[in-house]
Image 1 (tube, protein in one colour):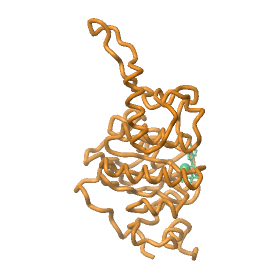
Image 2 (image 1 turned 90 degrees about the vertical axis):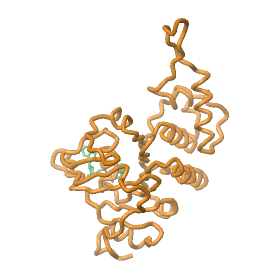
Image 3 (image 1 turned 120 degrees about the vertical axis):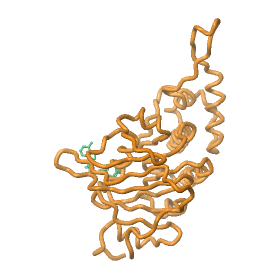
Image 4 (image 1 turned 90 degrees about the horizontal axis):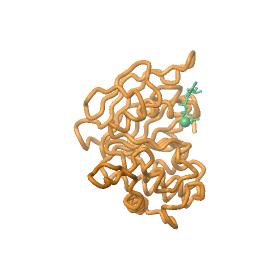
Length: 262
Ligand SMILES: Nc1ncnc2c1ncn2[C@@H]1O[C@H](COP(=O)(O)OP(=O)(O)OP(=O)(O)O)[C@@H](O)[C@H]1O
Ligand SMILES: [Mg+2]
């Protein structure tokens, strides 16, 4: 097995997201020990690794939840500092966290537009109030785009199944992301059929020209949709493979260390 010898498909000369030497410490724990990472438009990268390898920490450095202690991040070749989730979204990056962060007691439509509500201008263009019909119409469109059937976008998120919630979270992220979609364990806790649906949604998102990162412990599933597989081990990149030519054994060895044979 060879490590780190394969680059991603060069669809655009500049990576949409590039990180160099990302170091992140939590007290005495070094979660990331100098990670280089590249993502191109229209590319799906599976980010895999054992528990505690640093996967969530890395994407949280991109989504503005954490700030790296060292290293540089570029978006479309432009050096950026991402200080907050709001700044991350401003750069066209949307994240679906493992806990999904849907508000349980408000409607699907309200969740899709959380923090980005559409205002309707009142008389004289002065009085702003929320344009619920427009938000419902657009939310229904976004949900339809991901190919999931919901009875209505007016029902509260807490009444949805796990797979439907996942689909709403992804639909929301897809709707707002212009450059990068980061998905942390989007198929965790889903059944076979719902996993297939979510994987289909992820694959279909490529046509929007975004770069997509999918974190998953479900190697066989994620290998089906990924163009490239990046493996983290103990906070460092231990493998970088083209998905079409990599074997399951290569990925597992990179995840667990060379001494481990499968
Ligand atoms: N907020 C935090 N405070 C302290 N330590 C943290 C924090 N977040 C992560 N860590 C530590 O950083 C390391 C990497 O954690 P991270 O959550 O990135 O792993 P992961 O690859 O996402 O694992 P998993 O597959 O279990 O989700 C772990 O040792 C973890 O304990
Ligand atoms: Mg994690």
